[in-house]
Image 1 (cartoon, helix red, strand yellow):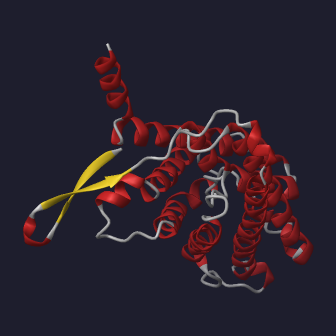
Image 2 (tube, one colour; image 1 turned 180 degrees about the vertical axis):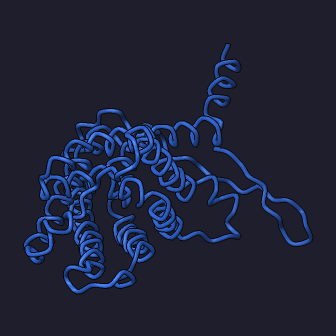
Length: 285
């Protein structure tokens, strides 16, 4: 139990209690017997399917509407701004819908970051990542089924390193972009922040969706913006072209490094977990 100060009437500080949840067990086999786990896994599958369906359709629609060879115009469609809104807006909607069931991860990098911070168990982490990847594949499969004439012609919404950028630049963009996203997830869901800043109501899905939106604006021209290995993997599986597979490692290594860095930064620097552990060690010495 820890305390933060709030302000009462008259300016007198008042103690406000908050309590961090206990660390999730590393390997909790009992969890496999609970329906709540499988309900959460299903929620992650469906949410990722819907996320890929809407976002990839937006990307393909934009490319079709700006294709001069097919009667499109340069300023047609939603533009890069609209694509960024599609990704960020869908994350906002889906995190809002699933947060109470699965936590609303919808991203293996987010799941890995929360696992490293001991927010979820290894069992849940593995099942979530599998469900997210399968959901992404199915979402892209639906896009191809409904838009078969456009899907391959306009790149299938697959993430690829853009011409003129080297792999190091692409990897760096994915690391920093994912760091921004996962850092926002930790900050928006921090129980200490909710206790300390209770006078500033924060709807957690909103800053998370905005983080996705802002990162897309910055990195669409470089990598198409991955920051979500399931999104990149699902599109690559259905599109199945050499370039998408050659660059695929960037969209796994970068987000995982970015997620790990955000988890360590939030837990050990901002939340001072290392100092607390050292103080506990000294007090027991």
